[in-house]
Image (tube, rainbow, N blue to C red; front, top):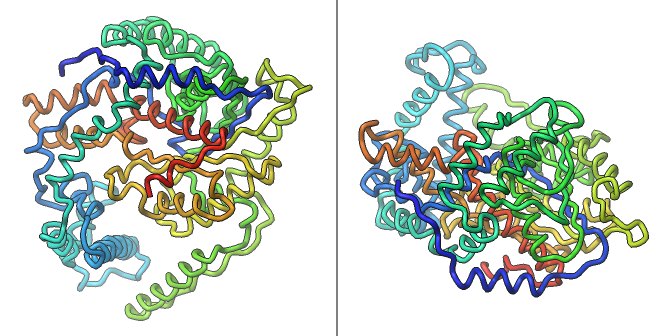
Length: 547
C-alpha cells in the first residue's frame, strides 16, 4: 500500500499549545493507579505505531459485505446478529437466538463428553476426534439443524433492520474522519514528523541491537535501549517527570511468573513485554503534557481476569449484588426445567459463602499499593516527604471476561468505593475505558460491561467524580476486515497482498487485543489521560454528553 506523511491540522497544533498554557499546577507527587486485564497489560508492539503514518486501510466492499454461506461471527453480514438496529422485539429475538446457540453448544458438548450418559441413537452421528477443527463445525451443524441460524438470517435480512451490512460498511470507512483531531494530536505529539523511512530505520536498529522481546536477564537495560531507539528514530517520547511502577503481567526485573515488577521513567515497553505498550503509555504522556507536577503511575494488571471473580472487591466477599441474586435464581429455574425435560436431576447453584480471603487480583495488588505508598521516594526522585503525595486518580480498563455478567455496574461501584476507602481518598477521580469491540456508534455504550460502566458513573455516590471514556472510535475495526480479506481471497490477488501488508505493519499479538495496534492504544491512553485531568480540574464527566 502507498504510504504518506500526514499533514497536521491547525486544530491539533492549537490544542497542543492550549494544553501547554493551561497546565494543571500541582506541588505534591501525583499518584495514579492503573488496573485491569489484558488490554491494561498492553500487548501492542511499538513498531505498529507506523500505522499512524499511513492512510487508514479501506477494505474492498465487494469482499467484506458478502454474506458467507455458513454462519460466521467474523463475517460482516452475520455480525448483524450483534449490530442489529431496529424494533426492540427483534433485538430481543436475536438475543434469545444467541442464547439458544450458546445453550445448544453447551448441550452438545456435554453429550459428546458423556455428561448426559451414553450416546443415544436419536442424537445422530457422534463426531470423531476432539479439538476446534472437529467440534466447531459439528456444533454449527447442530445449530443449523435446530433452525437457529435460519431464524437469525431472517431477522438480519428483514426490512426492520436499519443497520444493514451496507450501512455498517459506510460507518466503518468513515471512522477515522470522525476522530481526526485526536489522530492529528497523537501523530504530532507521539511521532512528530516520523514517517515510513524512520520506522524502517527503527526496525533495523532494533534488529541490529539484538533486543529480545522477553529478556530474562538485564531487563531494565534492554527496555531502556529499546525506548531510546524508539525516541531516536520515531520520536516516541520518554517521560521527564512521569514514572511508572508496574506489577503483574509485565516483563520485570523483580519477582517471578505473573508477579513481576519493574519501575522507572515512563517509556514504551511497560506493556506485557519490553517492546509493547498498553494504555499506560499514552495516558502517562498525556498527563505529563497537561499537568505540571511529578507523576507516578502504579499499574497492576493480569490477563483473563473478571471483575465478578478475580477482581471482586473484598466488600463483596460472600455477598451477592441484587442482580447477581436475581440472575442466579433465574439460571437455577431455567436449568432445573431443562434437566426435568431431559429426565435428569439438577443441583441448584448455591448462594456464595464468605471465604475470608482476598480475591486473586486483590491478593496480589494490595501488597504492591502498600509498598509504593509506604516509600514513594524509592519510585520517584522528585518526591518531597515534607509535601507528601496526592492520590490523583484511578484508571480502570477491563471487562472482556465479564461480557456475560449483568451485575457488572453494581460490582464496579463497589470496587470504586473499596479503593477510595483503602487509599483514604473519598473523592478520588475514577476513569474507566469501555470495551471498544462493540465499535459501532449505536451499540458502543450498551451491553453488560459498557452499559454497566455508564450505570456506575450515574450512581449517586459516583456522579461527578467518575467518567467513562468511549474507546469504540479507536478500535481498529478495519483490521478485522483485513483479516476477512486475507482469509477469503487468493494469495495472488492484489486484495490479499494489500491486506497482508497492512496487517504486517499495523498489528501484533496475532490480531488479538485491539489487534495489538499501537495506534489504538496511544489514542485510547491519551483519551483516558485527558479525561482524568478533566476530573482532576473539577470538570464535569464527559460521558454524560454522549448519553
